[in-house]
Image 1: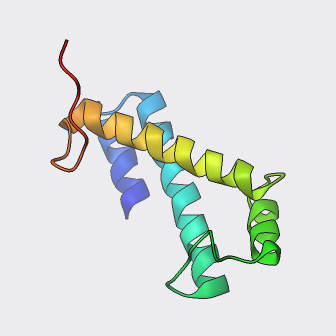
Image 2: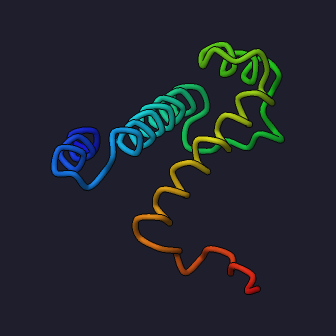
Length: 101
């Protein structure tokens, strides 16, 4: 499982404790969000089309005061994981180019 792999890579010195924690918390958050969305709406979720009841439920489920706060948390988690991936592996072909100086 992925959490075990993160732990093994941490134990092998491939990740610092902070890096491993970033991946662990990101994985748990994204997995929990994915499961909640599957239970609520199946495979299709469009925030623009979601009702206020669903947004309120999701926000409360994740301890956020609003759907906007949950969206910001999602952006932050994804950004942290992407930054770590970029640091360890380099950019993806789909990443926007970094402007040269």
